[in-house]
Image (cartoon, rainbow, N blue to C red):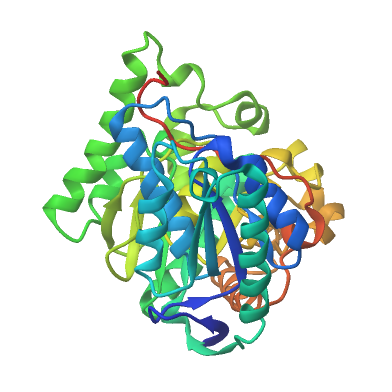
Length: 397
């Protein structure tokens, strides 16, 4: 199976062809947005909430994440903008993105002398990059070049019965074809981590899966709280879920049955092909950022039922990452009236008209079509975006 992608100098293939304007810290958000807005088209600003007031390990995480956004195959070229006193500094971010071989420019107020000069230079670079990117044409790539990542939201028993298992089937098919699948939500493997560990390719990976779950639970307990006070959440309970373990069993269904090749820190890129678990909380936009930094060229958000399904452009979900298409899936027959706002309907499993494998195959085919350029519903309908949210593990100083 093949998709039509944009060739990149490092041998990867993009499903989209964006110019990313990336601020080193949130102080540069307005400058990045002004440059992108002035040029328009495929030029987008990837604004975010990272400031200088973080512990060193979190600053390293921000650096890794921003480099990952810039090296994502869906980005044709990048402009890194900064003030000049940024932490992490803009220069090393630009240098590490440039290692991928794609065009990268650095623009800071310190180098250009004034804010106005910096914006003007950024606009000149963006216009040239936009023109150059238009010359890059799609060409056939085997689906082994695809990195697909998925998250669930509004989980109900319908998610467990239909949507998540169908995603798992598609993930297994992609991995079997040489592609890569990433799943996350450490809060939603607690109580089921031992089942994932059994699928690890070796003891070291199994130990890392257990470590990730225990590390997060210890961090929560250190605050004097218990995760079972927030998971499952009120919406899950209203939908019919009763325990954290029940929710976790449903959540891991989207990972299929393939051996787990590795465990990633949030925003870390897989070392090779296969199935990977990425550390991360259950915050949807935050996880999408981690997936994009990890190299995902297409993602999906899997809905259960209820109010999130009826909210056409679910605020916490639709914005996603401007550079990566997000497919929306849902499972509930009672919400079929909302079908036009979703890419894949999995409720046929519950209705008895399709098997999980048939829905999974349909999802895989839709993924290839969207990877080849068909707009996802999220791309067609969502206009509102918020600054990207980093996954801090330490205090903000």
